[in-house]
Image (cartoon, rainbow, N blue to C red; front, side):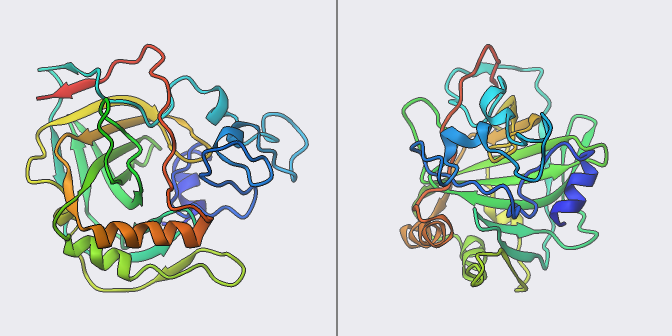
Length: 275
């Protein structure tokens, strides 16, 4: 699913890296303020030179002024017995392996039937991508990386399933995803690649019944809010070599070995937990 299609699905209002490499305006994950490269502290003030009127001139303003931003520290969760459980169904697929220029990504195939069901809501899976280190933290605990499964309903509602990754045993499915990521072309443009069939369920922990849930946003520009987040409590293992490969892709893409957004304030939000 390409960028224009996801924008259409979301009423031209939301965006989450279906094809994260918008030509303009450019941004990077750099932690320190650096307006020359449009680093994280500058996201909200980045201008679109093709626009003359506000708010169109500041397409990422929500990154700076939003009050329900992601990621967050999940440690203050409140156990909720009434929280709907998750039903996750990701069949095997021959996907599109896609280096967005910001993250290694997998775009599902046309008519793919993978979905996340939460209560009566069914969210079709459209793509999944990687961040290192993890974007969400749990108190003092940070994880080596994080995988985001992005789901979008026909009405534009977005749900993201987060999977925390820690160093341990190698994950063969992740290995395939990393192996089929092409470098950016000579113009710095994102690259697609075909590859073998993979089983996305192999990227999930055995225990999928325990998770954190909260109302948040996209973690990349334009940081649009109204995203339902579900972060699985139990991490999945990846090898140190796989983590190093992910970091090397980040370096080639943006010049840094990380591609995570820093944690944002809760601002009165409640983090629910299913225990």
